[in-house]
Length: 319
Image (cartoon, rainbow, N blue to C red; front, side, top):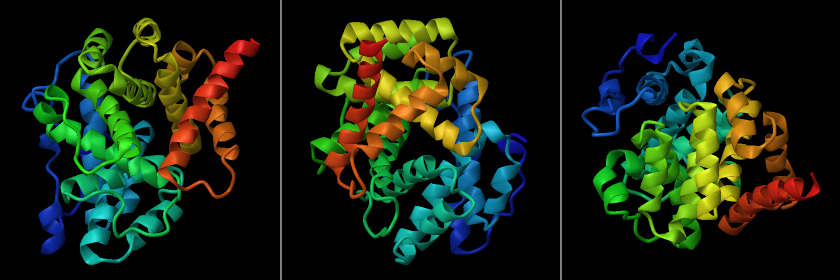
C-alpha cells in the first residue's frame, strides 16, 4: 500500500509529541519546483515520515505493508525515530542497533541516513551518544544531516549555500553529498534545473553535490533515461562525472542489498554508470574490501568513495 493508506495508532504521552504530519513534505508550501515527478518524490518523502511514525507507535513491523519500492525510505524514517529516542533517553543507541540487526537489516545505509535527520532536528552533530553501529556507515549520518538541512532550511542551505558550522572538511563533504540528494527533490527531478542549481555552487563543493544527485537519481528515480544521459554529460563537462557515477553505484548497492531493485534503478545504472546494477554495486564492495577490516574514520569513508570512482575509471580504461 501507499504510505498515506497505512493506518497507525498515534501513541499518547511523550511519544505522541514526536508524531509527524505527512503534509509537511508537500512540495507546494515548501516552494520546491513542481514537475511530472512530484507525486513520486512526495510519496517517497511520505514513506519516510510513515516509517518514523511506525517506530514511534511501536508498530515498526507495519513498514513491510508499504509498497516494496518505498520501504527503504520508511526504514530511513524509522532510523530517525530510533536515533531521536536513543539520544533523548540516553540508551547509547539500543533502538538503532536493534533496528539494524532486526527488521531493518536489509536497509543499513538508509537507516544510518535517517539517524542524521535525528541529529539535525535535535540541533546536534552526528553521532553523539550512539555506540556500536556500523563503523563506516555511521558517516552517512552527515549525509542525512545535509539532506535535512536542505529540505527544511532551504533558503539558507540552497539559496545562500550555507553549511552547518563546526564541521571539518570531511564532514562538510559528506554533508554536501546529502545536500546533492536533496537538490534532486528540490528541483523535482528536473535534470536541466538540477544542472543549473549545481552550477550556482562554487567548484569546490560541486563534486560532492554531483555524488548526491547520482545517488538520488538512481535510488528514487523520476527522470527518463534520455534525461539521465544528459545529466551524465553535464557532470562530465563540469569535471565531476566520476562523482556522479560514485553516487549512482552507491544507490545500486543500497537497492541490491535490500533485494528490491525497481525498474528505474535498473535503467539508471547503464545511463549513469555505463554498466548494469550488479556490476556498479560490485565497485562499492571492491572499494570497501580494499580498506581492510578496521576502516572506521571519516578519512576511511572518503577513501571508500574514492575507491568506487577508481573502480569505475579502471573499468573504463580496461574496456
